[in-house]
Amino acid sequence: MSGIQFQVMGHPINFGPDDYAGLSSGNAKVIWDIFTKKACEIYRDKGGESLGGSCELSKKGVTLVDSVITKEDVFAIKSILGDDPEISEVERSESPSNGSPYSGENTYTVKPIIFNVSLKRQINKLIYKIMSKKFVSDLEIYFQSFFSINHVMLSRAFPDPDPIVSFRWHRDAGPKMQTHIMVYLDDYETTGGRTEFVDYEDSLELEKIYSIAPSEMFRRVTDLSDIYPKASIIRPFPKSGDALIFNSTQIFHRGIHPEQAFRDVLFIILQPDIQPWSKLFPSERVFKYPSGTSLYNNHPFEPYITRV
Ligand SMILES: O=C(O)CCC(=O)C(=O)O
Ligand SMILES: [Fe+2]
Image (cartoon, rainbow, N blue to C red; front, top):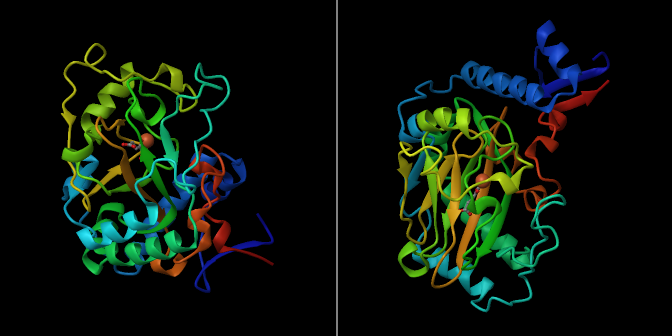
């Protein structure tokens, strides 16, 4: 590791021998665990609050926050998106990765919306609104560290009688504290589209009997009642402008396709970081995903490395 220094805002980050061994291992999970640990240490050293564990998000792994943006904000973004499912910004997504029984089939009814300049501008504005002082401080207490926005996505889901991928029970690949904010841009009552969750405690039980690698999408199920009838499923009913916030790598979740109309959602993907989100935002980088299927692809220390 000689010749490489890690610095945050000019201050070196100190590592122990175990950390160096972990960093040299090339194992993304190990490297992310070290990064997360450092992020918590730095946050504590800066006098960050240490009340983690008390909020619903910390206890259950998911929470519904009402009205993180206003109806006017929703309207502003909807008027850029339009309501024609075939609008040019919307492209049919790739079929899921090769090897799944769905490869090549044209049945994948979720479309990532391609960001144009006005969408990017509007989303940046919305993110500043959502990230109020209180909202950020609550999230820091949950993370026990600073956090940053890894990327944002806009997706439009259509009715689909045979749900696949994110619409079957799963956990995402990625660092342990990876947390998604789903800002619903439609009322559940209008579309029927929503998202369901199994809380931390039950997710720990479920993983013992339903252990599926992120690549094994075809083994994912839509119904848990045979596998784990006791699971208490959390079923929020979001209105447009509400946000679902959840730990996507530790708790099981699945989308429910809309029935009547399409469901638009803005996703903001958060990961622990060693400096506040606003130091790394705005950035073109947040619009760059997907570059791969795993968020482990991003080396968390990379922005902080100084080669000497
Ligand atoms: O679209 C949905 O409701 C599910 C989203 C999901 O699986 C995720 O954000 O990781
Ligand atoms: Fe997911």
